[in-house]
Length: 416
Ligand code: HAM
Picture 1 (spheres, protein in one colour):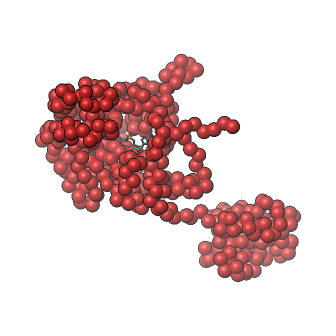
Picture 2 (tube, protein in one colour):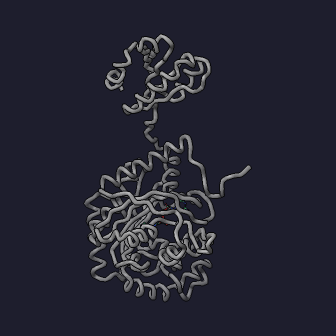
Picture 3 (cartoon, rainbow, N blue to C red):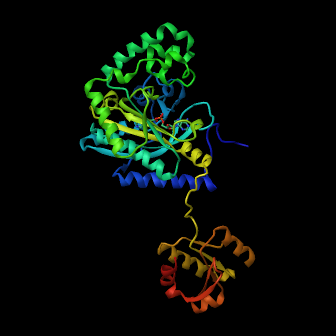
């Protein structure tokens, strides 16, 4: 038996209803904020991620699905959406009309050790805004994700925010961190030892050493922000207060990707064991780093699989609106053509319609209609075909009415 790969899963049945709902609500929320949809390829040239996402990130060091194609070129399955969209902004010169407010959804691939809330094929829903450094946009982006998660019904959503400043600030802070950790680095895990000189900020959010006292007493980046960065961060916080966003400032939050500048944030749910359900931040240098003009940008991605995991853990009910309006049964095979045409006409009038194809006994056919929980059942026999008078049964009350086919739409319009 050929089986699915580790860290991947199939979506069907109840799970597909949840996926569908989660996606559609995200689209609706993004559209209500005036974001337009963008889709980029799942596969890209490897340099895009190896340069853009950052050489010192875990994703690039050990988690990308890299392979040579038949022309001996290095390709990578995208581990995240931001770099691909940045490439598309440059390649399609989308930066000539700014701002660009974009939303996306799709599968990403990371060769991580599968565990609770961690998959190798993961689905992300995200937004990216290009062309504004106004803190209003930072607050809008954060609030879009927050309001979406609230609307889904997830409990106690909290946003952790931090500012990691610009390049100059981070360089000063980097030095301070190296000085702070260097004499005691032996106490830390192997990854942190490697991080000390390459990317000491990542030590701060190490999942292994997070209880270490030396880590807890590390200097705070917030003390290194310059006046402008501080003022910006204060404005964002003020706007988040106005928008009633439940946030906490966490000066240890640094995020796992190298491209961030200034504001960074993560969404957390009640189910802490699943990890962050989303994260993002500003990345004002990324476009320039991958060969484009310097343009401000900010965005986030939500982990759709993790959101579904939280929905399951918290027993959140997803509104099910997939019931059929009408299920059409025929008594004999000779009525099938009539039924086929009727189904088509009703569908074109916007009704959800299905047609019995089981060809079994009447009892079985009714059972089949129960499976779809159809609101109405139309039963067609030779008499109905001859007279065009149809029997329509309300599946809830079991009451039946005889209706001329010409009046059927009027009837349904007033009853459904
Ligand atoms: P990220 O923090 O790497 O950021 O991923 C965003 C979210 O994707 C995470 O918070 C998590 O919910 C989910 N996620 C990540 N890895 C996995 C996994 N292996 N299994 C399940 N879910 C996972 C980014 O990807 C950035 N591109 C976000 C961004 C957009 N920043 C600016 N714009």
